[in-house]
Image (cartoon, rainbow, N blue to C red; front, side, top):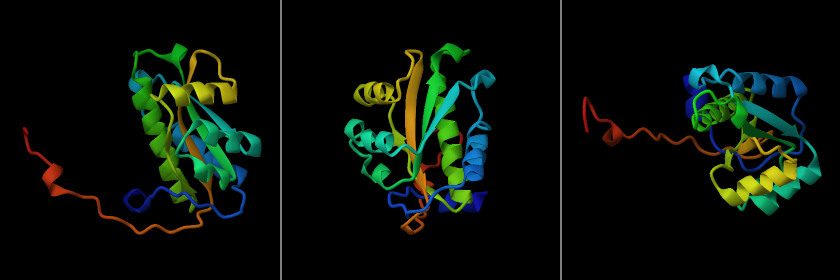
Amino acid sequence: MIDVILRRRSIRKYAKADVAEQDIRLILQAAMSAPSAGNQQPWHFIVTRERKTLDAVTDVHPHSSMIKEAPLAIFVCADLNAEKHKGYWVQDCSACTQNILLAVESLGLGAVWLGVYPREDRVKGIKKLLNLPEHIMPFSVIPIGHSAEKPDNIDRFDQKRIHQNSW
């Protein structure tokens, strides 16, 4: 697992190859295994391969051009009606988004985290694009595919960021 975490990179170039359904199921299983506040599990996922929808994301999200190459994307959303602990859905959806990225890496695929929430323009645009009910909040978009690039591994460990016992 440590190797997967250290190896994971944001992938923005994808090969023209489909992603197997069993891989998508494993990715979503990993997502739903994330920790959540009070086990509230507020997440819902929209998986789309629909080219028209994927391409339309670029009209809403200014940093999403790579989605035009990806064979699919997973939209991570929160059901605000499922909140037991108000506001913690952001942490819950962050944890499941990270689990998606790690599962993708472990399967030899590539992905990138595109943040939607808290940018109001992106939230409104994705809500409209996906016809989301009022109580469903889009959190992130994750384009997924077979990587057509191999970014270098970077050691991001920085001893200066570690404090013992107090600042």
